[in-house]
Picture 1 (cartoon, helix red, strand yellow):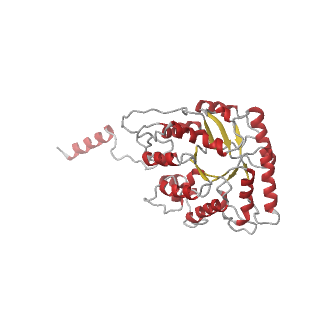
Picture 2 (cartoon, one colour):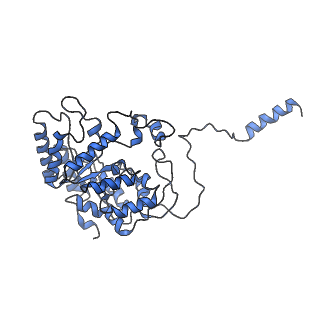
Picture 3 (cartoon, rainbow, N blue to C red):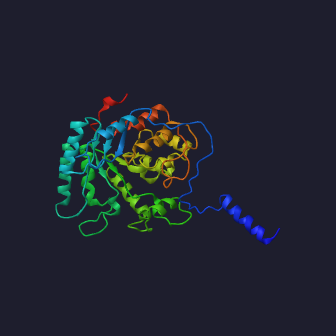
Length: 362
């Protein structure tokens, strides 16, 4: 065979067959599983449920009818709106919820930590908190900005356990309202950005989430501040959002729950951690069934079925809805009905005051 003929055949082959060396990045690599196993998507929760970690920032002015319609399809009976704000905005949000959508929304207020430590600041803040609760707020939501971004009157980072904030947490205990707090972010955001970092894909696609080891403080320090706050205010009930970023270390989270009886946890945005350890997670849910609350965090109705399937089914190897959060498959925990009822609504009815109990089986 001549060299010329070989060249012609190579050219023909090049255009006749797909390349075996596709130029594809890891970010784009997302193969469909060929595994065929029993199971199917669960689009509606088995029991009516309460979402204790909802966000509807425009509730004061928004027509919530489309949200209600979507909630009905999911069996979501009450959404706790953590973005109620304070003062006039909060009052309008509560009025809108009560007047047009009675019983379907509960509203938490928020605290503005700007200028903390200034003269008269704490008295004014506590007075506003009391006014917000009197107006109908049923809890306080604390954003992750406390411990990360908020500074005091002198421009210093405001620690979560700063003693100048103590009257706020004490007042919540006196008023009988829970504090739902989000502190820090996943620890991997503070770790080295390399091939050993399990959140590499998330940090690659969302680079603003990456932090240095001390930006603005070590992860361990921020979490320690949060736990200190729980210890110091034993008469206040706390809901630790995102399982306190210990859903990937349930052994340690169990130790914290044993030590801190006033701490509860929400499962918002960490279902992927639970879905990859079904046996250990199921045992954890059974042991701490009175301390775990359902929460989703972002209002995306199409993502709720992943939560239902992880909690309710015994399905194997099904996909998660965000590859950059979890490039691994999910497995169902197959929780019992009694545990499901507690996670879905019973714990929230006990912890959050003023919720309409008539919407739920007893």
